[in-house]
Image (tube, rainbow, N blue to C red; front, side):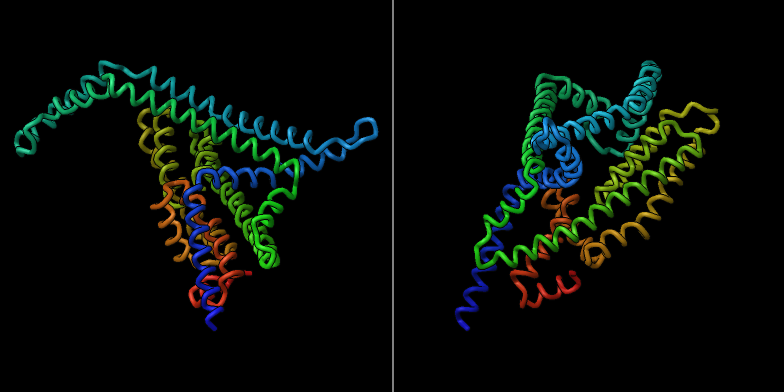
Length: 362
C-alpha cells in the first residue's frame, strides 16, 4: 500500500515537472508542434515523389521533403499575394485623404475637449497640450528608437521561428517515424505500451479536431465572402479568408476580424455616398449571422463533440490558457488540453478528478 502511494506521488510530481518544462520551453514546443503538423500535411507529397524513379532507383525521401517544403513556401507566397489588392485599395484611400480637413477636424475636437475639461475641472493639463506632449514623445529619439527596436525584434523573432519550423519540418518529412521514435526514446521501458496508447488516441482525437477546424474555417470563409459579395463589398474573398483565419483564435478572433472587416468595408466603399451607412450595416449583419451560425452550430460540434469535452470545460481551459500564454495560449489550449487528458487517463487513472475529466475519451 505504501509503495503504491509513493509511486502515485512520484508520478504526480513527474507530471508537474513535465508540465513546468513544457511551459518553460513553450516557444520551442510551439515550433515543434507546427513542424509535426506540417509534416503530416506534407506526407502525401513526400510519398508521391518517393514513388518516382531515376535510373531505376527510387527518389530519396530527402528530395520529397524538399519538394514539400517548396510547396509550402509557394503556397504561403500565394496567400500573401492575395492581400496585394487589399493593401493597394487601403493605400489609395490613405492617399485620397485631405490633410487640411483632418487637421481642422482634430483641432475642433481638441477645442471641444479643452472646453469640457475646463468646465468640469477634470485636469490641469488641456487636451491639446496633453496630445502635443504625447506626439513629442512618440517622434522623439526615444519613441522612434523604441519603434525601430520593436520592428527589428519582430523581424528577428519571425526569422528564427520560420527557420526553426522549416528545419524541423524537413527532418520530420524525411523520416516519417522520427517523432514517434523521439517520444518512445524518452519513455521508460515499463511505460512504452501506455505511451503507444497515448500516441494512438491523441493522433485520432487531434486529427478529428484539426480537420474540424478546417471545416469551421471553410464555413466562415464561405459565409462571409458570399455575404459581402452579395452586398457588393470590395475584396469579399480576402475579407472572408481573414475572417476564417482569425476565427481560429477562440472568442477574440471573431471580434477582431469583424472590427477589421467593417473598417475595410467602410474605407473601400465606392458607391453612392448616401448608401455608405447602409452598406456598413449590411456588412455587420453578414458578420453577425456568420458568428451566430459558428457559435451555435459549428463550434459546439468541433470543440465539444470532437474532443469529448463539455463546453463549459472548454471555456475555462481557453480562459486560463489566455491568461498564461496570450493569444498563442488560446489557440493551443484545446489540443494541449486534449493531449493532457489522454496522458492523464493512461498514467494517472484511479484519481477521482482524472477519471471525471477523462471519462468521455475514446
